[in-house]
Image 1 (cartoon, helix red, strand yellow):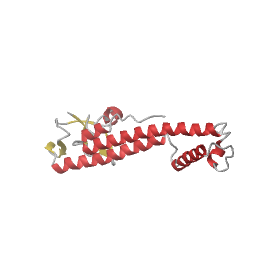
Image 2: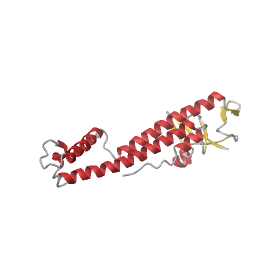
Image 3: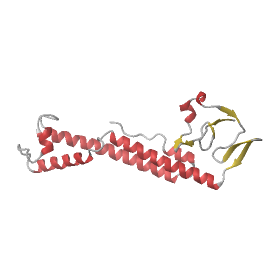
Image 4: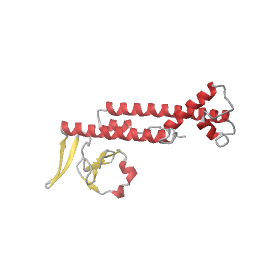
Length: 196
């Protein structure tokens, strides 16, 4: 069996298809395909099941042993925590593609102002509507067109945000319910975040 020694990794001897952690980062099972075999040193070692066994290099040669309950539990807990952080970060990035970070309150105020302007009968005097008056002639030629554009953008953002929320919640559920590190990895693979 071919294994790869990765200093600082947990576990330090990793086979192709086996996830591992390095510097608090979870690397997926397909790490070798992404990194390239020539970027790490291959070592010949006895065959073992990395999900249930540990490969150790001793002065006298290789040793294969079953993982302890604590090792299995610790790997799973660590993988789950890192995977939840990964998914939450991806969700935040997906949301930020639709809304400028830090401007959420501005968007809410614009929608509130648009509703108030519409409820007031769409008056020509925009003095009481500073966001609206500031965008007429820039964003669109008229106040009605600015409001229509704001509403259209809000609908698109709401749809995208709802999709992101559903993907995030489903992935986190899969991660927290996973009983193996491989199942944790599977819960974070192939997440189809919306793209603007």
